[in-house]
Length: 319
Image 1 (cartoon, one colour):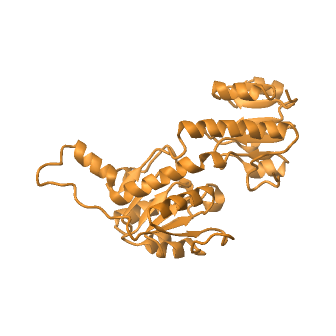
Image 2 (cartoon, rainbow, N blue to C red; image 1 turned 135 degrees about the vertical axis):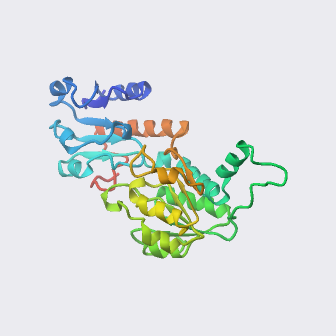
Image 3 (cartoon, helix red, strand yellow; image 1 turned 90 degrees about the horizontal axis):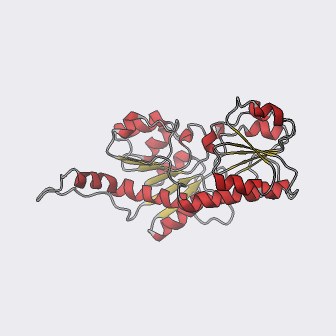
């Protein structure tokens, strides 16, 4: 066992807690006001923090002067004050690869459901509206459609592979053109939107992307275009999206993420041309096992002196 005392919430799943305890001493706490924190503040070197624990603030990290590592689960890490961590020499790790394929499956399911209106068709049937001479009606087709992907990282590329199988023409937009990528590249989100029929947002969260997708993008996408979001809800201007849908400036939307989860704007809930999911893109048994396992391996590698396996992009550590 490594001499690398860890701190984790008392609600951490038992199997994950047991795996961490096999690596290093693990201290569990009930909340930021737990009195036991004062007694262990001078020994904690690593914090295991899940997205469900709310924000991990710089003020909380500052309570542990020997802190070296913050390990979290999933691809996103906007719930952690990475700026404070980096400025104080604390490594932050996530588990980006584990969620890729299942999130990409969800993205493509949203594309199909939004364009083909399958959820609305199911509601039509369940409501008893399918009667002789009263069909649900036709939907748009994926044939000859163009898919534009904003944020061409692991998940964006996985969606692109699925899109090719469906015959969609793929293009992308990101901070820069990527070497070895044959898809057409557009330098701005608006330019990408003007050149696609289905606009997929795969941007991460955080201040750098906040409200990046707004009215100008929706206007460029146009009244026959569809918007899909499996990135982060904070990267979209939700009022602008609701207005574009209400005014018919885009045809529909499929959303798995929202700006203020779990709150979902009532305007969006009321719309028939919107498919809504409660942030379930990576919520599979496979992903839960994979992210927990990768978190443990990140902690094990760092605690043994080998460095992090998955340092987040803002940190200087290399694998």
